[in-house]
Each structure stands twice: as C-alpha cells, then as structure tokens.
Image 1 (spheres, rainbow, N blue to C red):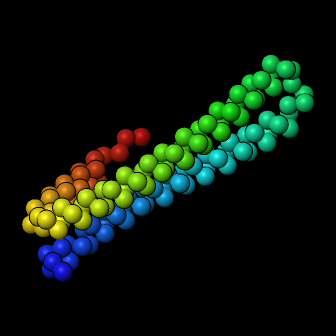
Image 2 (image 1 turned 180 degrees about the vertical axis):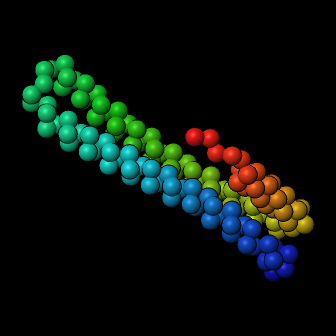
Image 3 (image 1 turned 135 degrees about the vertical axis):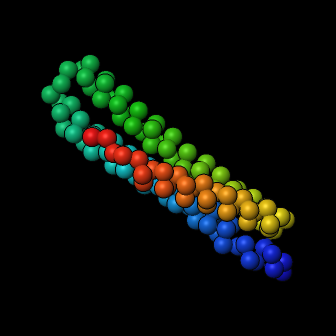
Length: 127
C-alpha cells in the first residue's frame, strides 16, 4: 500500500462526502418539488369540476409540466451522483499519483475559502 495515498485519504474522502451531500441536497429538492406539485395538483383537481373546459386544459398542462419537471430533476440527480462519484475517484487518483501537489492545492483552496469567509464576515450588512 502506498503510504502517501493513505496519508491523504481524508482529502479524497472529504471530496466524496461533499459530492454525496450535493447529491442528497438534490434528492431533497426533488422530493420537495414533487410534494409541492402533488399538493398543487390535489388543490387543482378539487376545483376542476367547477371550472370551464379551458381551465381543465390548463390544469392538465400544469400536471404534465409538474411531471416533466420531476423527471428532469430525477435525471439531474442521477447525473450529479455520477459526477460526484467520478470526481471522488479522480481526486483519489490524483492524490495517489501526486500527493505533494494535492496537499498544496488543498491548502490553497482552504486558505482561499478562509479568506473569503473572513471577507464576508467583515462586510457591513445593508438593510
């Protein structure tokens, strides 16, 4: 086993965790959107009997749009999961092949994020 890879495994695992969190966030957005669409459709279906034919057509279009949106979000979630897995695998490979460069890059990114965090914390809030 390559000890350089082992010592930098937390970086690869961190990338994998971040990718997984992004995918979980997308899944949550899909579930929320589906729930919203279902609730809206239930409200619409309750009133469909009271509206003219043109409005029923609009309700059907809204239902189709909601269904299509949910499918699109689901497809995008699968894409994000795949991309996250690929990014994690690539990060592991880069760390294994060039651990020093990986550590320097991680330190630079961390320093940049810390500087951004400090800068955002010092900005006066506008009301």
